[in-house]
Length: 118
Length: 108
Image (tube, rainbow over all chains, first blue to last red; front, side):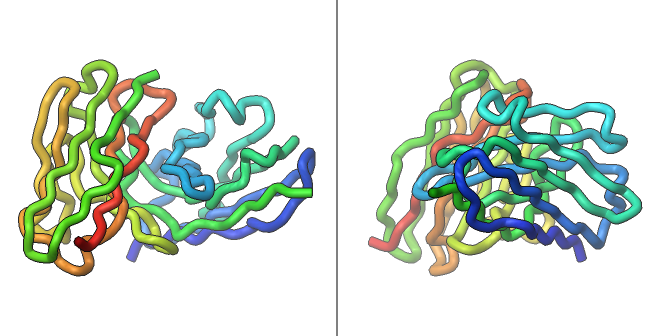
């Protein structure tokens, strides 16, 4: 059974940092692109970042580029999102989701909540 | 960036009735269009990909159609478990991978 489980969310002050993790099981992690998608309160889904199978390519939405860093560890079957210089508008539920090149996101985790507030 | 626009924002439907949701792209997405179902506190679920293909396990009451920039998700006979928010997503031109703003299907 394919499983993706996010962790690491919490309350952080503006300007602070947080690292999210996504532990996966039930599939060969090294053969999939992996994504982070977020949903701000009362808003829709927004793709945030993704990373190629070997980590050699990474893409970011403009609003987080230079502040967030996506990475992966195949030995640990885990995906990460290092979030620095957090802003109030980064508050959201963050989901990890798997995909392949030019395909939709076929499995998602249940999300982890990030709240940025003073 | 391709902008995805969904309509209506909210759709009120009685159980057993048909629901039709629309999604428009700002430019052609060459059929690379997916639909997701999202319920509060749950993981989003892929319902349709490549405009009209259902993944394994998705009931046949869900169907997708369209081409170019105009797409439709139809739920032929709404069941109680179908009341949720539905999002379309294009994966033809990236980054970014873009979603519509969602259509909430609620009980009438």
